[in-house]
Image (cartoon, rainbow, N blue to C red; front, side, top):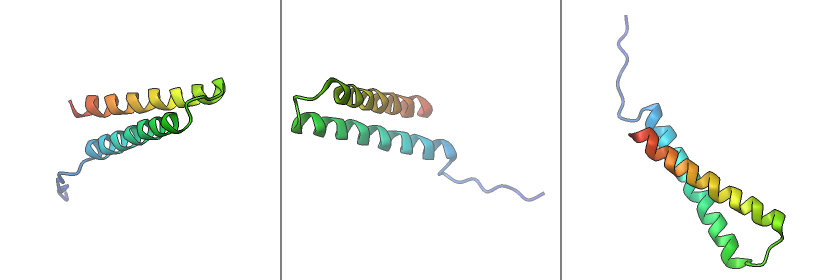
Length: 67
């Protein structure tokens, strides 16, 4: 049987990096939006709040995956 080569770059690391990058991008995009346009409609503000929540969940998830 052919032996599987072990690589330092595993699926867990790839998922963790992707979750971290996506979470940071969502948080930065939401922060830029708030800095540029502070007075927004409630629906748009709810969408940005959702982006902040998803970004935070992805960042915390990437930390949890690594533990």
